[in-house]
Length: 488
Ligand SMILES: NC(=O)c1ccc[n+]([C@@H]2O[C@H](COP(=O)([O-])OP(=O)(O)OC[C@H]3O[C@@H](n4cnc5c(N)ncnc54)[C@H](O)[C@@H]3O)[C@@H](O)[C@H]2O)c1
Ligand SMILES: N[C@@H](CC=O)C(=O)O
Image (cartoon, rainbow, N blue to C red; front, top):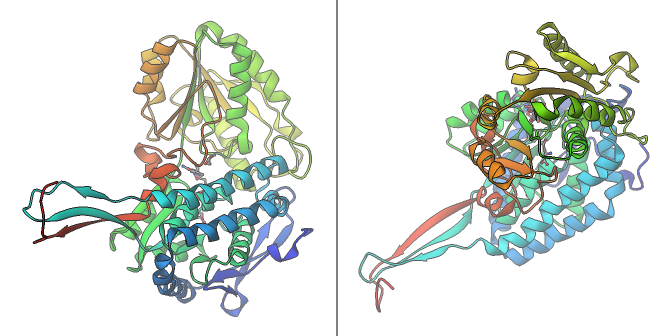
């Protein structure tokens, strides 16, 4: 692997400041999704080694929480700077293991780094409060304290930002962290560990464990010393982690699947809306929790929208992320088969194939952008998060009906509205059962905003002031029998 700094390519787990192999060198290959070649191996730690990571984090907790916010902030700022200095290497590692175009990978390094900087500053504002006393001669108030050892289980689609959005907050709050990245994309996470070490983050404070997912989660979610579990991934695995963590009643933050509606009203510029819908659908090859999954278009502009959508979609270049492309490979062959099954199901049930010819795919893991018109709620493309470059579009006539159709899902992460009528936008926005609604723009995320969903899309928020709260407990205090006036 050609990196400017070869030491960023780590194949061992990082526990208590030590690069750690699996017992008997137990490991598994990590493949380049663009060509199936082996990039390297990730260590498979056993249950005892995972427990060792909890012990290390628990040991490191006292020292880390005792640092002033300025000292923790300085270390995090140094980590942030190192991410920028090594932006090109991090982006290369990410493209190789995840497949996304290099341009997008660079964007993710910037996006991911921004969370570290944000939380390094935001930790200064972890204010408690004083409470006007109802008890004579007492002083009442609250303090914010770090929750303790925090576990982060993250997906392969955003191998860097899904870690830093959690770890930036937890570390800033004073919590030690154990990250379990997806086995498809461990190298970006391990490079983050290398840079955390160089930034001076002490041993045991930032750990990256790799292993068989079910074993790792079982050990971490059932260990009493782990006080918080933050997970980004599928709703299926999220539910499993809730069950595993129930026995020890942990704090849980869950960023789960989405099934985003993209609603286009008839008063918009049709070409611009179609261009944005294409971008919202095909970002990260459709493997994005914010991807427009169901596109609802007012009947008056339906045909023209489909025509413009197809034009913009066909302009997307598909190929290895190392080349000048817009869409890289899907993460593995199973994802290609799943996308094809969703297309087949829709066609069998009467959807219209407007564009998309899978015979043009440049390799086994690639899926050619596909446009299906006239989709209905009976189809999988409507009900499921497709997580692939398959776009499903249908027409609507009435605002109330389209909001009801958009809400007809167990998910509630993000929704999009395109219109120029402010009263109509407001009414729709209030009616949509989603954690995030983006109006006339695709760009809605960033470090200062509370990212998260409702319904089965998750619990809690990441980013913004709310993101820090996920790693803080509120301690109430009552100082009784104090001199002086009370209740003021
Ligand atoms: N809401 C968000 O912010 C957000 C962001 C990114 C991805 N996602 C969601 O993530 C999903 C895609 O990611 P994915 O395929 O990596 O999800 P996934 O649930 O399969 O995997 C996520 C993580 O869980 C681990 N895991 C898998 N099976 C497990 C098991 N049986 N026990 C314990 N851990 C297990 C994986 O190794 C990985 O680290 C999509 O549903 C997407 O919407 C959500
Ligand atoms: N695109 C999302 C991640 C979802 O997959 C983000 O911006 O955080």
